[in-house]
Length: 356
Ligand SMILES: [Mg+2]
Image: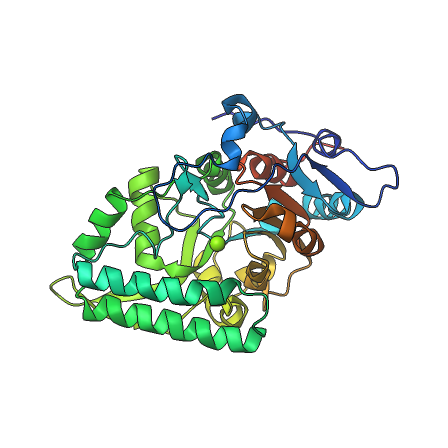
């Protein structure tokens, strides 16, 4: 695929400024519609109100919020000047690389898609979701307390997967039958980054083995520059899950894992400048493009001693309620489950050697 290399001016021209110049919102916020987790629904999702052309047109900026255009401008310039050998991408998986809505229904997560071939255990895991998910999104529970609850939820879910005899074959079958889809533009983003040896770290509180299977089945190819940090399963000789490797990663402790897990993995990725010695590659990649759909995803880059970080947030739902906090947290906010084209454009700009 031929990507258009846009000048900085062109990119920023998609981001018109407010009269004060201090904060820009390019968006007509469409009234959010709340969906239950149940996969089948009759409601029309927000992004169906856009036409297919609008969704596929990379220049469509009507769903982008840029809280501080001057700051973003400066960060883009700084990363461009440093060159793409200094750049790394850190991306959340569920509802960031994948779509929040799939065919009018809530898309599945790497945890949610699993059918372990034992309906009793699928029901038990759903019951845990029904109990813990409201706690996860409750604004009144202090973060420390919530983190303990999330640890508890993940622990119980993983135990059920083991107890219920999850097999690798069940993972393959679950992914084949799943409602999980990558955002438009994700493949092009990965291809662009792979061609330039820019490492992509997929950092997820989901399940590494499921994510790998989703990549295999949905993208039909592998990318040598992609590594996954997530909850990793250990199978016995018969292909049954027996345990999980290392510490549990849940939605609220990605920051605790950033240093001890992201570092070594990045070190293994090697570097286009030559062979990696003494774990130096992660230190060389001092500029970060971070993609996430939760404010907690910003913690994915904790522990990396970055110089410049551009953070992109996908605000998929509850736009009116959450926009203010997302504007404070991210450099760019894509609304209503938009495609990845804007990020493809941004990355091509970050790697461009053309002048402004
Ligand atoms: Mg997510």
